Length: 219
Image 1: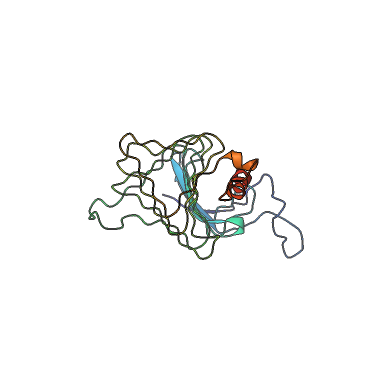
Image 2: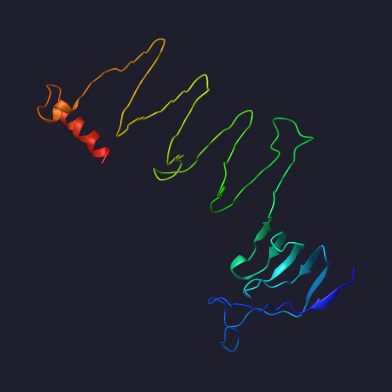
């Protein structure tokens, strides 16, 4: 395909945080060495500048639909970024020739967060086994947090095992139920039952303090 050197200094709105040039004036990025190849089906460009004039791409592939593209960004607020956008599906397949125990896909972030977000759909994880591991030092790290605006359900499983080394707690501001249609076993070196009656008159074992702490946690 024929090639040509073109100036890809894009016109359009210029962001406020564009760095000033040597004269102290702010302006969009410019370059005169960009090259582009393409036809009515798509283009390949080296040195393209984005529409706000902030980022120069080392390499960008664009389909007929401008939303369908893959780019390696060189500078600006997206320095070192690799971006892929698709108006349709994005599919990644690997490991056809690997064994079950091998690591076929590795997604690793040296620093920073990994975000998997479905704006209007479900996120599904499926495998022969699923492992969630959180590793961190101190009380503020090494945690797994689950939050749901409606329900958190575990069902159609043979066993649910919880093994806590220091403490576990299950609480609700509403109704709590424990049901076993076969045998219900409860064991503790000491078992204490406390009701809200302790709020008016403390029991002989001092349940009022425990009652007050549990109601404080629910506020």
